[in-house]
Structure formats: structure tokens, C-alpha cells
Amino acid sequence: MKIFTIRKGLVAALSFGALILGIGVYAAVNNTIADGVYAHFEQFGGPAATRMRTLTIAPGEVLGWHNHPGVGAYTIVKQGTLTVEDGCGFETVYTQGQAFIEPAGRVHRGKNLTSEPVITAQTFIVPLGNPYTIDTGQVCGRPIKIEECTGNGWETFNYPRNFYSQDDCISSVNNGEGSVFMYFRRF
Image 1 (spheres, helix red, strand yellow):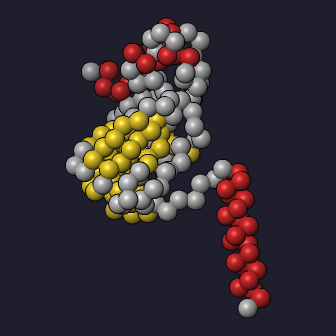
Image 2 (spheres, one colour):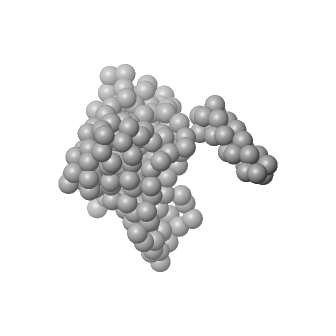
Image 3 (cartoon, rainbow, N blue to C red):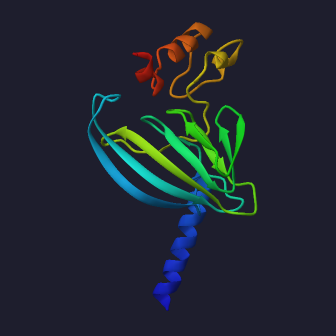
């Protein structure tokens, strides 16, 4: 009985500590369907790992800020309504049957603002040995369109680096800095 009480107290203390430190404890359920390895993936110039999964997000749940390296995440909403907020302050709503790409390096988080579960199906491809997801905290990461750099837009981006000017930001988009689009620009 005493051991049970100590464990219960430890779990409560760790949960409270995680809350204070800003570490998310999520109810989302990740169901890996399959993992595989490409012996050679042209985009990365070497071996790559791939994963297919479903992710179930509970009603009212907000996931933590993160991004996906490699080619990003190819996502389909199987059930429900998913709101995706990027670290730069934009939100997009996707409903059942809609597919979209979570661009490589773009910081975002998923939100289920409804009373029904959201289920997504996703595919990831990353250089072998890299994670499929990187937790970041809220930052505005990687411009993906030149229009995002114009005006003073270039000043908003602060992950994985700050830009020195609008031209620096535009150059990063044109060069595909850290992006899957770099591969396609070669053809």
C-alpha cells in the first residue's frame, strides 16, 4: 500500500513538473502501421527511413509545437476536422478526405477544436537515423514561398535561423534551404 502511494505521488509530481517546464503530455495515440528503409533515396543521396502511421487526436487536444525533417509529412484527414496552426500565426482547417503536406522544417501544431476525435494518416521519409518529428517550442520556421519574405515578412522567421534581409529570405526559398523542394528544382 505504501509503495502504491509513493508511486502515485511520484507520477503526480512528475506530471506537475512537466506542466511547469512546458513539457506536453498528450493523449494523442500514434499507431505505427509500418516502418521501412530505402537503400538509396535520391533526395538525400543515401539511405532513408520511412514510416506510415495513424494519429488520433482527442477532442479539445492541442499538440506541441514541432516540425518534420526530410520531406515533411504527407497527411490525410481520415476522420474529423483538424486545425493546423503554424508557428508564424497562420491557421488552416482540414476536414475528412483532405490531404496536405506539412512542409519540411515548417513549425506547426495540430489542434482538435471539436468534440469528436480527429484521425489522420501520415507518411514520413527522413535520412536514415534522423527523427520523424522534432519538438521545437513556438518559433516561426522556414519560409516556403517568396511572398512570405516580402515587405517585412522576412523579419518574422526565426527558425532555424534569422534572416538578414528580404533578399536573404528570398534566396533561402529559391535555394530550397532545408526543403524537399530543393530536390525538384534540379530537374
